Length: 547
Ligand SMILES: [Ca+2]
Image (cartoon, rainbow, N blue to C red; front, side):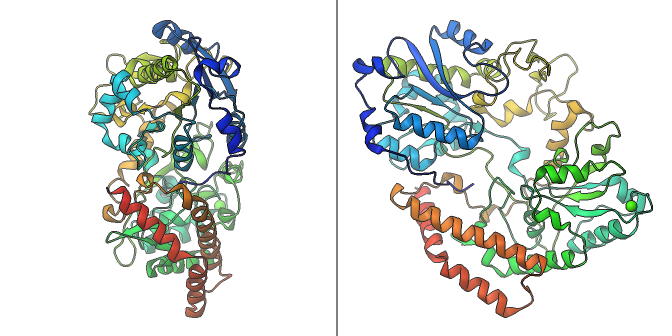
């Protein structure tokens, strides 16, 4: 996602009142009595205070931890964090989960300049050898964390999730292709033929025309996968909704290009033939899953989902999820064949230290994070106790990436005792490098439950490298001046929402994509919404990010 601008922080005055000298902090939530007070989300899988890893790290590092907890519900978590920031009663540390709620880049700059949070540069250099080593191994992480003024106001989680970096995939029923004697489609026109056959030739064999050739949901958009057969489209469903890309070093909106119109023309023609489920544009994920799980017979032929578990419930008795296989990026009429790439780590910060922390507490806090950057600390923090949450790789087991030495096998929790292993789970994925993730053991049969990660890994190989490298806009490295953040947020909302609505209207035929007048009017509306200024702000920030 583009750095979205959160609600303005309430009561800045209160924030400043909160910046008390450490010596007076007895009435603050943070303190200098040797305890690190951590604001963190707590989920269904147990209590952070009593978690095995909490006890382990307290003994190993000789610290005391105390938690102020929030929830895994994003909106509620965001609100509670804002209240905490405004209360004048700051914790020593915020340790968050990126997909729940985290500090935006704008917040980091504002709070850093106000002195509410402290720069981590010196603390890392002096007390965090594992983080320092990781910065050297992965300079992209340091770049992601460094504000334009050179300060590291907080650290994001580095989550090098290979399959998530190519989110906009299409999965199709191989058994239907076999039944109809068809090959996996490779072009937009072959895709049309396959979807037509799915619709009209009863591939599920029940004598009813009940097949839905192609579906999706409001979180699993149809458009990104198909548009990439016409021009590079970075959209990745709910991960990244903007269509900004580079053209010879200039930031441009793909949705105002001629290729976009061609892509819409193609999708409108599929829709007109009844080959796309209208619900794909209006229904949520639960509704898509209900169609995929249809009791009488499988009815969904293909879906634009990141993985098959989003279209059918995995591991059902009839094994229907095993029939879905990935379809590589399609080639369009002019030879375009792209796949959207997005950095899987989310820019911003999940870890910050506040001015409430005494110098001693700041050092203890960065040492805690540094331990979680070590391989041992990472495994124990994320998965908990050995033998319960994970075990070392056994003789003969194979890593997800077969070229790597297997390190450990994750043990899924017992549903009756979800907290038994006592890890911190998603709160601990700071150093989730590609090597760490891909050296985990995975079953070599991709259609088993234990082989599911390998199935996603292999599917992604079909998409990797298909991004238009010189067109990828690295929005994750771009920082905006806090002074323009609210202007930018308004432009972004207005423009991106208008693109999404209009694209849908063109696809469903509410607007006529063949009408030059209607296309012109669409472009003029984009101008009226401030497209030029929107691109200018991005261009300036992009150029600044190049240093
Ligand atoms: Ca049928």
